[in-house]
Image 1: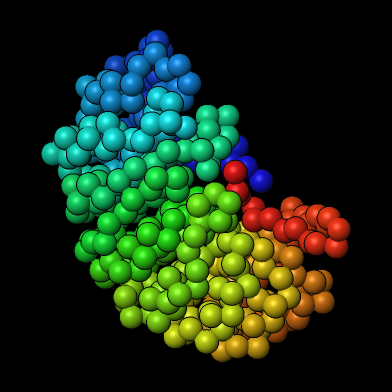
Image 2: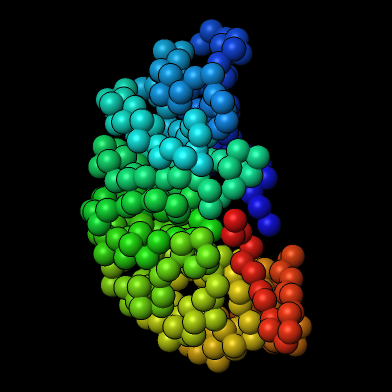
Length: 321
């Protein structure tokens, strides 16, 4: 699976594309109300006629940014080669013009622009420092991604989508002080694309001591999904979650059995295992065990397919390259 369409909503708002270079920018009265949409600012990822920061300058001039609640950064020029340093700089410089900003997503880039593991990211720490009132922060692409250990008082949702998430990023998030975080969603990916964390790096999440408000934990799109589930089977954090998401990865009967025979999961509102390599019999057991308790269980194998070569079985995460 690849990512073929842009976000259609973010931070509870419909996404709206700010007109690109060469497109007529209507006057303010013809644009959506500044606080009614998540504004996507993007340029062509190949041979762009303007740089992202130039498009952003046009956005600042055309929109009453004091009312903007959500902003989505789309492609910048040559995303497969260039980190978004200028993007970060432009956003930080405009922080006083964005006092109402509560949602920020960096890298809403689809396969025609750059595959997820080709996106060159950079140090996004200055954004979290510049916008202390952010409630939701998301990023796509793990190549070169840097997130610092930090304290952020108001962040409620953190999403990092990748085909391979560096262990340094996982450790930084695990060591951060995020007292308001309700929803953590990490796409761990594969070692082939830089996903080099192991279960030990996830231990602070399992212990449940760093994120006191956490209600949804998603550790997904991983080639170590069985090991993750084995650890979750006895992890203290699970007892206070409402949703657990271990989807999109290489989950087999080993990991699913560990979840099923570990600590009770009947308190969950939802357990998501979609895109998996679990047998039909075990998927049925999961459903019959948990659904009567009111748990929404997604065991759909989706498009998970495996290949066999000389007796060796190859299985794949949902989003890799």
